[in-house]
Length: 364
Image 1 (cartoon, rainbow, N blue to C red):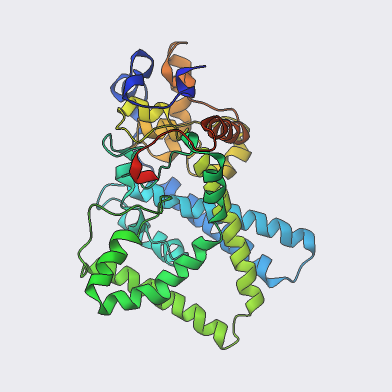
Image 2 (image 1 turned 120 degrees about the horizontal axis):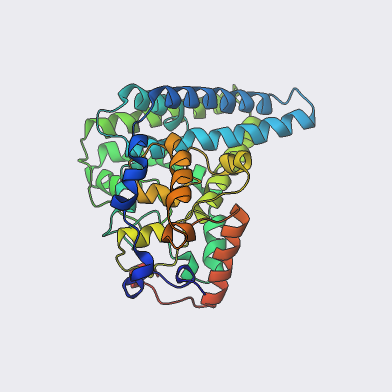
């Protein structure tokens, strides 16, 4: 058993977890510059593929083979364009403003998941909050019984329904009931996986950007609802789009399960231990890029160097693997395939037993 096969907690943070960003930055210091051309080309091309494929799929004017390909390609592209929200969360305030606005217009609002929902992401990189009940992007799956993973995946069908419910029902109520709006912004306005997550930095209930964003989501959702009720959009089309979105969400949630080892018991971790609790996926480049778009295949490297843009992560990883010593902790991070990472997580959950391993009470 290796150090990475045991729960991550302060008692573990010894010699094997010594992996500091300052030690590797000199090797990759020329790779931190964001290239706007890559971002714009990638986003616009992916949007065209996602929505073009969706149009072919819902039109149902072609054979089963074409529709199947259109469904898969569109779902993968939808997953990719939605993932740019993660890059936006790491951009500096004022950086690439036009890109952020366009992403929200083309992706965030239509999917009812604007980038404001991901302003909580900084806590996932915090030494104080990562892997604790205060981290909305982390649950101790590796220390919990397998049923926790099954329950997590079983909630996928609810995600788009809850997004529509929020936009159509909860948002307009919140505009006239301030106390309800405070709850909405605190407990129902974040792109997280923890059902008990609440924001620490609560937006003002009259914050103009939040008001505008929520109003736009409401208008968009209400417009679609109107077109459905007057017959302009058929129930079959809605059902087909629902299936497409579910598949795309499923890809993201399987990716989420393979992104970390999820073996922290809720204790605060050092930066090095956060990296070692995360995973890089090697595997076949094209397949891995489909399942881990926009640099997510290098998730551990991203936690090591979170300010590095996604288009530089591959080069950085190759440099580090070529230069770092054979006993470097960084070499313990990779998994060869998604299946390998998921299998290890499932085995960890089975080893935890039917009651799991003790974790923070607020997670129970």
